[in-house]
Image (cartoon, rainbow, N blue to C red; front, side, top):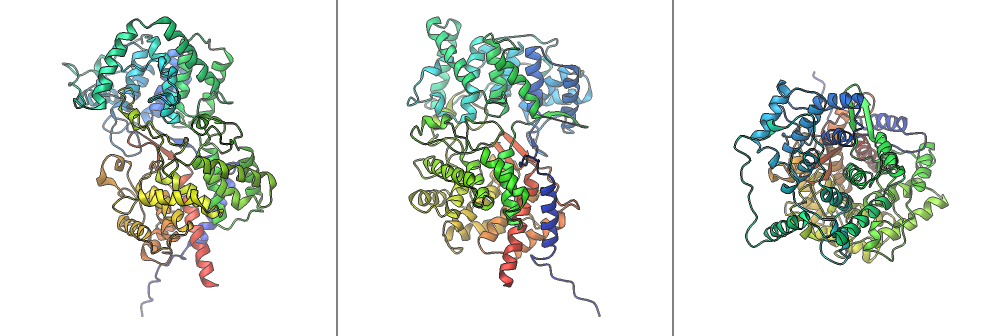
Length: 632
C-alpha cells in the first residue's frame, strides 16, 4: 500500500529555517552592535567616480583597472548596461560606463565597446541621455554648456516661502542642485585624451519633442532661453554673493565623515563645486570629502565598486525586529549591543527639515553612519519599533524613543501622511524644470513611509488625531486594484506589505474592505512557485505591477501582510512559506540577485544585500509564533 504524501503546512520546516536564519544573522553582527549589508547599485557610481578622479587629476592606475573590471563584469550580452539586475539596457548608464572604459584604455573597436556604441547611436546618442550624463561630458568638453539647461546660483536668493526655492526640492535634490549651480556657472571643460565622436549618430540626433504650447514645460523652456542670455554676461554684484551663499551652504552641510547627505550625487558635485571655487585638494573640507569616499568602496575578485549610500541604521533596526520575531529576547547580548548602538545614533541637532518645522525639537535617526543633517521618518519609525522590543528598562533608550515619537508626530504633513525627510515637501512644479530629469525631485507622503509610522504609533499605543490622520491617508491612497504604491521598495508588493500590518495594528478589522481588497490583490499576484516578485519596470509599465521573478524579500513582504490579516492557514500563505523554506540556503540565508529597493522610481534602484535575510526571517518568525499561540 502506497504511503500518503504528507501535506505541506505552514509549520513544515519553519522552525529549522528560523533557527538557521537566526544563527546567520547573529554571526554577522559587528562588534559595535550594528549590521550593514552592501547597498549595490548600477555602474554609474563607478563610472562617475573615475570621471571625478580624472577631473581632479587624482585617478590612479589601480583604481581605474579595478573599477573597469567591475564595469565590464556588469555589461549585458547586448553590449549595454542596465539600471537593475536583469533589466533592459539604459542609454545614460551605457554612455557613462563606455566613457569610463575609454578612460581605462579599452579600444572603441573592441567588440564589447563597439556593441555599446551602436546601442548609444541607435538610442539617439548623447543628446538622448539625461542631463546629469551630459553635465559629466560637458566637464570634459564633450558636450556644450550652451546646450544644457541653466540653474543659476541666484536661486539661493529665493526665500523658503517662494516657489522653486531650494527647500521646495527633496533633500537629495537640493543637495545636488546647490553645487551644480556653481558648476554650471563655472562652465569648465578639461579635455580628455580622446574624443567620443563614435557616440553621436550620423546626421545628428532626432529633434526633441517639445512640451505643449500652454504648459509649465513650455514656460520653463522660454525661461531657460532667457537664463542662457543672462549666463553670457551675469551681473557680478548679483552673481558673486549668490555663489558665496551656495559655497557656504555646501560647507555647512558636510557630514563628519566628509560626505554630503551620505549619498553619492551631492557628494561628488560638492567636491567639484568647491574645487572650481578655489578649494585646494589638501583643504580640510576637500581632503575629508575625498578620503571619505574610500569608506564606500567595496573591493573583491570582481573589481572595485562604490555604494551609492550605506544603510547601517536601517539594517540594524530591521535586524533587531527580525530577531525579535524569531524569538530572540531583549536580554540577548546581540540585542543589548544593538540597543546601545541605535540609542547612540539618535540625532539631537536640527537639519533642513526645520525650515518647514522650525518649532519642533530635534530628534530622529538617519539612514547612514554620519548624516546628522537629514534624519528621516522611515528610519526613525523602524528604530523606535526595534528599541520598543529590545530596550527593556534602559532609561537612555526609553528617553530617545520618547523624543523620536514627538519628532515623528511633528513631521506629519498637512494631509495626514509622512514623507521621508521633510514635511509638506509637495511642490510638484519642481518636476517641470528642464534641468531636473534625474528622478523624483520632491518628497511627498508615501504609503510605505506612512505605514511604517502608523504601525509604530499603534504598537506604542500612541492613539489620537495624528494616528487617525495617518490611517485616513492610507485608506484614501489605496489603488483601485487594492494595492498600495511603494516609493522606497519594489513596488506595489512593498507598499501593500507595509500598509496591511499598519492598518491592522491601528485597529482595522481583517474584514475591513481595504484589507480584504489588499489580500485579494496579493493572492492574485502570487507566482506559480509560491513566491511573490515585482519587476522594477512596474514603475513605468503597469503590465509589470505585481509581476516578476519571485524573490525572498518580496515574498516575505506579502507574507507579513497575509499574517497580519489573519491568513496564516490560507493556501497562499502555505505556498509562500514553502517557497521560503525550500529556497533557503544551507547557511541559513537566501539568494537574491534582483534589486528590490528604490532610490528614484523609474530611474535609480538598489539591491539591499540584507533584505534577502531580515524580511524572510521576520515572516517565518511571526508565523512560528502564531502557530505556537494557536496550539496553546
